[in-house]
Length: 306
DNA sequence: AGCCAGGCTCTCG
DNA sequence: CGAGAGCATGGC
Image (tube, rainbow, N blue to C red; front, side):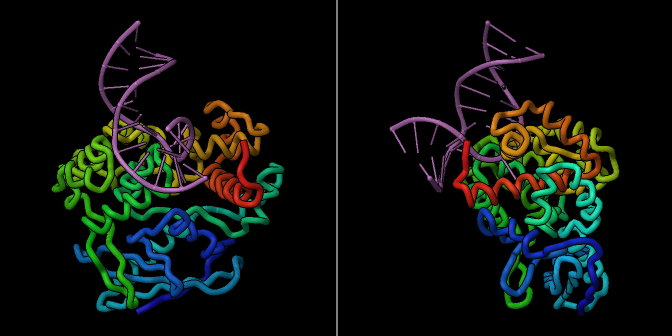
């Protein structure tokens, strides 16, 4: 069973999804030559699905297929996930028009045309991924996260490939810290992850209910959980919920990008970064994504730099 | 070898 | 309340 539709607004799928293999493999989000595979849970059961794409960035057609097609509900769930992963609700066209007023962004747009941030459909997955990425280089974070996924996630076959469902909170809640330590998480991060899972299982933290609240309420709720600071909460808003008016100004890579593009390589204060980002209004999320991608591009061609 | 990676908590002045 | 140590590993 499958369905296809044409995307409205610029979208370069391959460019946007490439981040799933930039720093290593992600067993829960498989980007293969044939397309993108993932698992979705419907009525308590995990089902694999895949999607492929055709056409240029201005007339992209997405094709979503569910091999195990007994229920249309699985296809509906997969479609909703794909729309979320590709961030189809972000108004990139409007961002492009607005970017004309900013020379830095105006120069990046044609080079990155169709790029969108990929959004995580699963809030627990987003938070665990963020904890893994706290303070360490992203290649290492990917490696550790992949170990977690293979250890606690369910294997699902789809299109001749194996993809893992990202571990459910209940499975992680049953783990002990020593088990996670063996995956080269620090004791502290192991405690954060298990503690988070247990809070979710106990109902103390309701991530689904959180999604309708304001940015500030979400930041306040998340930062009251041990292991989740402002950095994690802001990336959750940006890359999990797809909120447009968010800038993780404390992020090391974001700070470097702002220093490079807006201050001749010298550091800007977090407040200064927030003030500039605020002028982009609902496009902060996408703008920051372009700055980070632009920085990677320049690092590659000019060999990095102070 | 040593320092830095897309942080956060805890502990001290 | 701000500053600083500690965390653990991989890459340069």
